[in-house]
Amino acid sequence: MLLAITHHAHCPSWTLGPPSLLYRTISWNLSRILYGAGDARFETRPSPALQDFHDIFDRISYVGVFGSDVHFWQHGGITGKVTKQEPLIMGHKAVGIVHSIGPSITSVQPGDRVANEPGFPCRQCRLRKSGRYNLCLNMRFAVDPPHIQGTLTPLLKIPDSLGLQEAVLVELLSVAVHVNRLTDLRPVQSVLVLDPGTIDLICAAVANANANAFSTTTACIADIKAPKLDFAKTFVTCSTIIPDPHSKPEQNAFRFKREYRLSEGADVETVVKISFRYASGGYKLALEFLASRIVAESLISSAMPFEHAKEA
Image 1 (cartoon, rainbow, N blue to C red):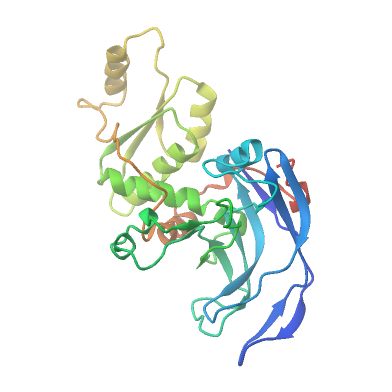
Image 2 (cartoon, rainbow, N blue to C red):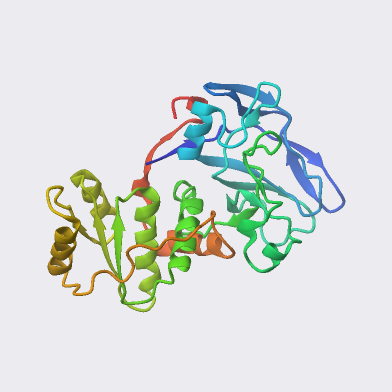
């Protein structure tokens, strides 16, 4: 479902920076560069440097490989395409350790563990100011051909109780937080999840975690493949049901309501809304859920060294 790869460790050198700021610069930085579909190369690139008093420079520890990354590898992009003239550094779901900070930074310190949020809103438009920064028309998102490179993103501090590998999942979880907000899920309501993929399972887990602050939420997951339901039961507290392909939809619905004593069916079953990424506060809440209420380690299929990124 998910693959995490470790970033290569580099040897830093010490350099005296702006007044009252001592920071390290890395003279070289090994990067995975995508030149087009199936054409990814290791290259040494100049290391980034602090250019603003509000900049933060972090050393990447893990980068998650998700469906969109595989799509870039197979097709060279989604909407915009990577070209040999304008290649792209990959990676947008990253966690790491703060390496150096600008003198105006007070939220984190060198050595802090942080999760990278891949979106840069403009901070000036009406949508951003109303809390819907995910809809900002001037959003700059990591790994967006041709000019926005990977892992150049804002940071959020990772709670001490959360490991770096699990923190790679925070963007997925923030999407699930946003979905749960849009459905307006209430305590004691029942939820039916159909054909569960990774995001769907995380949505069910967030529904349970969110409800636990008040009471319980009944989650039922339906699929025609038993192995998917077996995994679902190991990941989230839920009931499962396999629809009978030879029965009519009405008959399967009747069996579902009878077996789970839901005379009127599930409270939240089909909610059709347009959802784009995540919204204000979602990242922070997702980190808190990962640290205290949701065990998501089983979604990580494997961890591989950065040098084996192609195999990942």
